Length: 171
Image 1 (cartoon, rainbow, N blue to C red):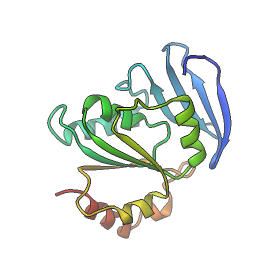
Image 2: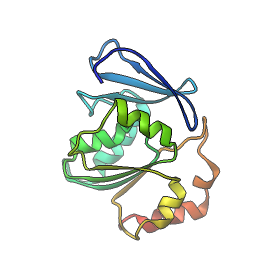
Image 3: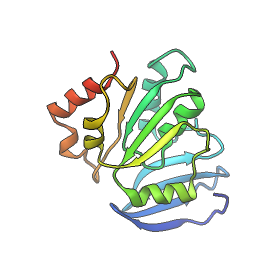
Image 4: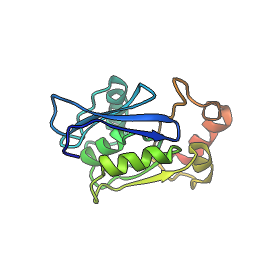
């Protein structure tokens, strides 16, 4: 996306806005109902603007040796900031992103497309259901980044959910 014009669209979970960063040529802030969700720099996917995203990136960085590919399951996707980070810092990684808001996925695909060789597969589905259907020991890392407003949905905070995460993670 090269034009510096904000994009506003109704998505499943509210009103999404993509706003250009005036200081970075191809960088965008995604908000939903006014709440910041993601920040993406298409020219520098390793640039993570939000502190929480940088903290998650530190976890990714510590999950294996520098540059080693990982199999990552992202529960929640937004504008795919962390999957883009993994793709450029750990080439060859296989990543599945599960995002329930299909309208948001369409907006991101249209305006902030992934490179064809990113290794990122995006799925419009419920995170808990996807996790329950995932094969045992199929992921090196699971990133939980799902919010309903300012809260994590209850079905992603239970002991049963944590057991499913443990089942899907490789030892």
